[in-house]
Length: 560
Image 1 (cartoon, rainbow, N blue to C red):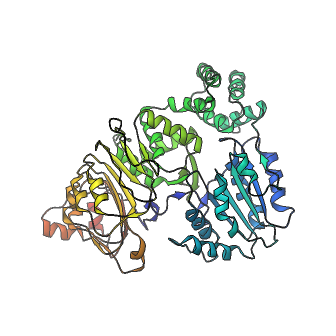
Image 2: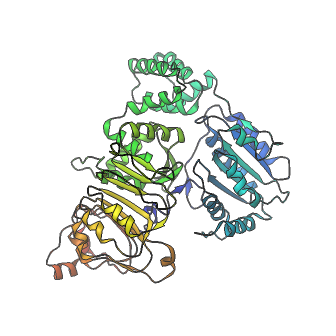
Image 3: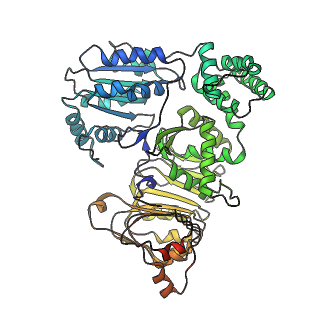
């Protein structure tokens, strides 16, 4: 498939969930029990007062705060009422600069984007974007009052009925922005609404068989009115609509809710995880590598799953299709959510609910599946460092001390420039299969990476003209190679030059570049006297002056 490659640039496009008019938001129907909340808040958004009003929605995790806010945000009448809208997820590990960047990019009238501006520059731009316009801003999942203090001064009040919606689990955070404005307190569902939601989750518009209705009512009641728990259990019940299976699940839910450790809802969510087959457990736990509230591109995720070896090949079936089937299974079980779809209806991006991510991280820690490195963690304790995957969320690339180099995946979600210490750290992991460093800027190709012969997935970015070495063919297991431009190089005539030896790497499946120059395969045959049929190659992206002739396609029989 020839495309612009941007979808597979996780360091740039994957981000804290933010609204963009250039994507198609997933159709998010209003769950049972939120009708009155929706009508009440619509009135507050469209009625008095005329001055800027902050509407805080507060409630426990999984109760439907974000769902309610999203339905308000996407309502056609609300959309038409406001001149501009923006959605930003705050989360626990927020940064004011990142929040302002998202708000500025979402409210620009020219449709462009800004990157790497100072807080002061962003503040001026945001105020300018909003001045004189009726705006709606959603600040989702705020955890402390400092987040509001960091941005409040940049929202102009032009007495034109602009509104800000803030969602939070914390009552003190809800009250803080405007103590005179009433907060909207979310409540748990009634037993009847709980059953209506469970039934709709399992059967849609169809009726529930009579033999299952009494059991279903009991299960719904034992979920204690928490919508997330009901929906996740509904995903589990929909797998087997047999009376004996429902009775077993009913006993499990009752047992979970009867615990006295304050962890009842997490235990209910665990029931769905425990029912997963082994390969789906791995796929679900892998979601924990991404930061909180991260919007994940499906195309990126699938390549990672395949590189990890989670997807086992079957005769005739393409690995990517098998991975999509696993993804659909997790969605149908309500363990992950569709965030955006393409214009053709295909799933574009995903998110995982905060509470399900908490479950994911808890299970992943129990199984030593992954380790998150953030500002609080720079050293892995000796004797306990047997996590197979490391995800670095630091803002600055502090050196990380480890005592065991048998990790198979290393992912970076922090901006930075490569240095010798970082490269030395990376190449110390001799068993590495996945290196996702697309947020790290390299001035030259780090030759030490060529010693990582087990690599299946390699992603990084460059800031000036870059030649990949002929010895790239040492990475004979490589399936996916992603190389993009970042920073100053985006403004200059900087290109990526690929070696002839690319055509001798038979396991390649996806090649994604910016301004990449790829030599003709027949030149490779003439000079290297060696050329293989790239039976697995499906994607070539971001190439310049490359002619995909019939003869070339014969070398790539599965090219889509």
